[in-house]
Length: 316
Image 1 (cartoon, rainbow, N blue to C red):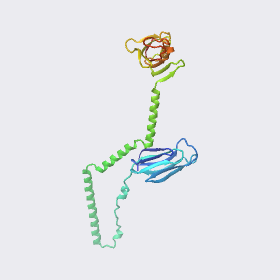
Image 2 (image 1 turned 120 degrees about the vertical axis):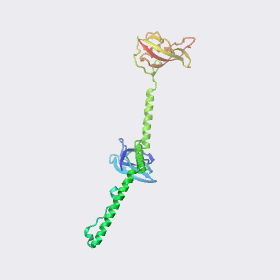
Image 3 (image 1 turned 180 degrees about the vertical axis):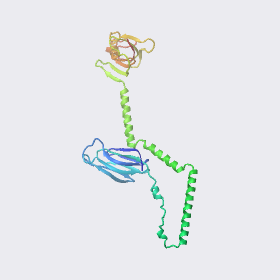
Image 4 (image 1 turned 90 degrees about the vertical axis):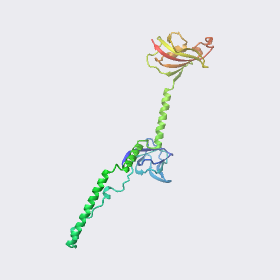
């Protein structure tokens, strides 16, 4: 039996893990995790063919890990679970199944040896006949061995050996896979969690100011920063809250103004401040920071909240 790779299983409290063994494995250790609660004893149990067997008993603060030496073979259907409130970790190795029950030394037959003293009771003539017989047997055996060796050399590579190599390679590939279904689920959960975190990070950064202005960073730029007193060049699309576009600058010469100088509505002076070149923002501007109760007829009605998608093109 030789080791192919690591095997491990995280047995959560009050959960049962069932599987059919694809690649033989050896369980070498049962242990609590880093966090242990309570003082209740935990029994680690394996169920094989409908029968339950206790592998070991673990007790918090007294016995928290136990060496084991159990091998499970291909095709076995089994389940692992643990009693109590604490998780248990089973670890070991994937192994190969040995098909050789006897070593080559056991298969070789020892030649019988004759002691000359055993021949004392024979006549000289009988002794000669016996020696000739033994000599002839040795020659026959030698010729047979030579014939066998010659045949073996002429034969193509044995199919059996090829099959064994294929099986071994398949076992090695299997050993590189995830150790058990629960571990696979654990990794999948981690990936999903990471994806959610990345999605959360990529979501627009939204801030609502006390004056009612809402600023959402759609894309953070890279380059010079827009600050008061600087001339900024902008692309934009302006909409009413019903989605109707009332103004836009998406091509040709970009719209340019001095930031903080009152050349645009207050919502722009505040909302564009701090942007980086090539950055994109969505500004939701209340009427008091836009055109107020008068509006800007005929496109912008009185007391209208406006929404602008803006992009900073240049800072000078």
